[in-house]
Image (tube, rainbow, N blue to C red; front, side):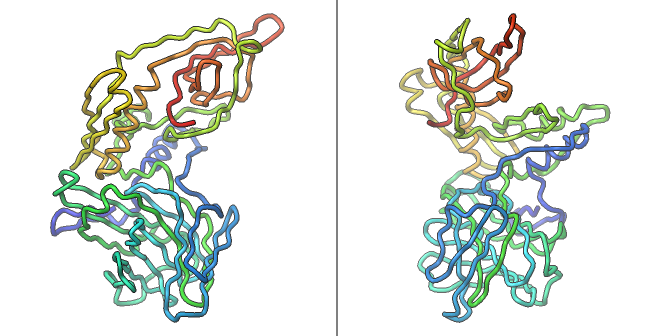
Length: 400
């Protein structure tokens, strides 16, 4: 992945190393062969906004963008409504030239369009607020080696140097086809993108229909500069360094699959009632470890998150956290907020015994008569003629 330092760019031409890759690499080193990750987006037919007169069809495997016959030489866009990180990767498969991907789209309409022409030529176009047409900002002078049938990876990386205001921001867009580096474009950007929500999209040019399959934006897309493991060190040691400072949950499932994800809004997996299920209930409240204001310092920038609701209840409690892998203001702010939530989870814990639930797993959301909880741990015991779960849980704080 390229890194822009003033007037110089360095690039090892390898695909970017993401947090998801770290789990795959260290997991393979530890003998794990199956993994389960979440996505910010995977192929779905919902949430798309399509240019007038164009159309989109989608199912669980493929999205087809169809453009009308007029006007001539116009790119028709389909924008996905899901918000993606300021550093992320977009992957999809194509079987013909003429495709295009929208990168860094924001509500003002500004975005980049990375295209592969009908002859395989790569260009990066830019749409500015209030514009009537694209501006070519990067173009390969000759046809490229992009295969007609290819698995495409587009890496978008934002790097912030300095404070949110007055600092320097650089954006890198790199294209890979079948794991081979094709091209990279780097530019210094305006500060308006630092806090803006960004989206991605897919395109088709006038009088064409382009099919995109296996479209995905991984959830664990933070770009890492390096991974390391010492001689004789367990894989968990290297993984711990790679994800240090990120609020990531992971555990081994019953079938040998490594599950890793960021906490977020989920539905309850189980509901417990005092009358029918719960016995030996105990609730503990402890606010000693709670922070209500966190500053997260990244590699070259920082951001702060303060929770007025918690400050009003528990007072101003400040902490500073460092994570050199985070290089954008938006991701610093996200991780600062998640750090507070991680402490908020521990405000109230509950332990209880209940009837055995064979499908319940650690980190599942459950509902009790006291509150919504997250399963911290569970053990199963035989009690006469029935099986009993002993469950330790903490507060669920990620939405209704």
